[in-house]
Amino acid sequence: MREIVFDTETTGLDPQGGDRLVEIGCVEMVNRVPTGAVYHCYFNPERDMPAEAEAVHGLSAAFLADKPLFGEKAGELIAFLGDAPLVAHNAGFDFGFLNAELAKLGMDPVDRARMVDTVAIARRKHPGAKLSLDALCTRYGIDRSHRTKHGALLDAELLAQLYVELMGGRQIGLELAAEALVVERDGQTVAVAASLSVSTKPFRSPRPHAASAAELARHAEFMAGFSEAIWSR
Image 1 (cartoon, rainbow, N blue to C red):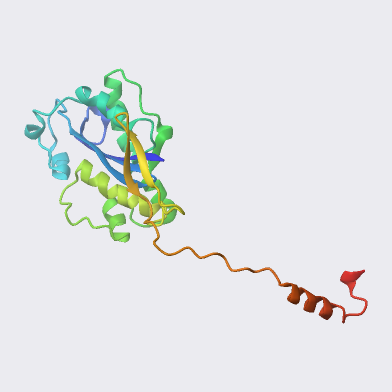
Image 2 (cartoon, rainbow, N blue to C red):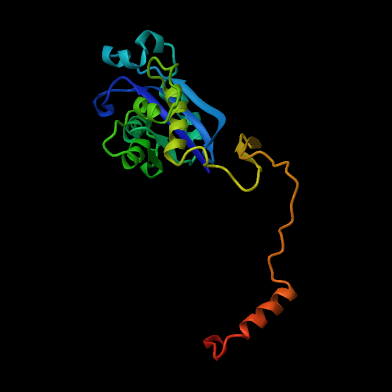
């Protein structure tokens, strides 16, 4: 199963009030194993960057000034997403901004039926606990020491690890066979990971468990010692 874990950075909290998407980071997973394929892009929001937003992600208007407009990259982004389920932390926020940008271009929105919200999953597993990405990474022992500010691709990579833990941990993906995972990319079949190492132990035939003729004879002799047994009526 192919899934995309993604995160966004924005100029604020309200896409309907003029806030814009300025960064997106996507991580491809197959059977909840990262394939190494990612999509990452900064966008020129064509507006100023509020100080509060810049304090969160560190992206200034000057830095974004020479970056492409969302419309220039929308096609390749949608192609990367394909029809896979889309995993995000507080996914309604990210879907809201993504679909607002698509609406500005007259493009179809991404169907919210594809949305997988890790906040909702974490809330079911840990009611009453802190549900921020930082708090959940701490809970599951995911190293985030290299994260000094929010960044879409870095946060998506952390979220991919968290998602695996929320869905059952490292045992997910273990198979009885050790065949390599493959994905279709750019018209080619690419091997991306092996789910389990091939065993080098010698094959052992199963031991016989059926009763021998001698054992059956002794059993019959034993049972004959019961008079008027109900099972013989």
